[in-house]
Length: 304
Image (cartoon, rainbow, N blue to C red; front, side):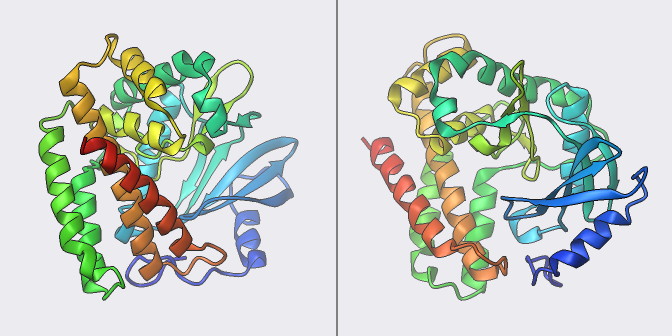
């Protein structure tokens, strides 16, 4: 589903995708297949096979966004071994079949609930600490400042309508990187949207490892906050819970810089998607405007 440059290409007919899923060798018998909503870098389906349910993810590499499926697969398998994510029951190029978790997808309102802070922080800590013990083979790093510079080069080379803004974005990225400074290296999820956290009534699960890789814990913390509408009180509680101490001035500054970098990356991701994506039904220009506004609000706080 990508073109020769690794960009999302014209989507095959739904019937073709379902035929491909039905032909996978992992099934015991005839399967029922239903499309699932969501997903801008893959297509998701719920499959029932002999009374057991699975999620099938279809997606090729998207180099322009740093999405490489070998890395997603390695992270998914390690996350399952660490007890954080559903089991991978079958994988082949462009296809991953996962055990289905009977659970409710969280909302930003759920994420902001103080009663959920402890289990969410525990989930993030276990991701950062435990997954590296189970990783096999080569995996990626996720340096948000490299990602930003690469996105800016893509915008320049592609003649984006945002070309005149590239120098300003680059200057801001350089300043943010200098404030973040040296980092502790953990294994990050790097896409902590509420929709990637599930609650089965007993525990939380973390799913969708498209952007996983070694990174600073500040990126996941800043991303969780910026993606889910945290206010300053939520953020202070989050940092205190994760680091086991109230944040001092240095940590707060580094965190604010990384939160800005997280929002910058999401804005540039959308700008690049305006240029390269052929996914239907997604208004990337509107998504760019939304994330630019969120970035500018965070930048204003960072600059105080």
